[in-house]
Amino acid sequence: MNRRRKFLLASVLALQNSSFIYPSCQKCFSRIILVSKRSNCPKCGSTGESGNANYRYKLSLKVAESNKLFVITVFGSCLDTFFGLTATGLHRYIQDPNKIPETLDNDTTQNLLTKAVETCFVG
Image 1 (cartoon, rainbow, N blue to C red):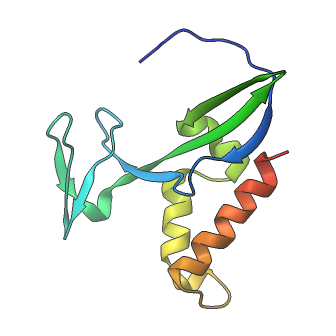
Image 2: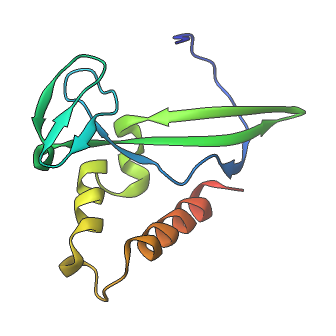
């Protein structure tokens, strides 16, 4: 991974994928595998209960700077401000049908959330 930082003033053209929340390892922040009631980190071997999983933001964007195209990925809590809550909080909100006024299926909820993120970031 390149740890060099560069300031980039660019326009966001598109979301690269609609999956911008992932269950993460509490030790190394890698994506964990949720199986039944257990979680497992393939990178560091950490295990736990899937109900206690933490989630992180991972927002991949296609951006343009003058005549160059880039794909950038923004991770973690720096996106809390844009979403208004942590990734774990957003995941719990989406999964709890009592918090959403009308019952929506998972695909509809994901489509609405993706559209909201596109509206916020693209342009």
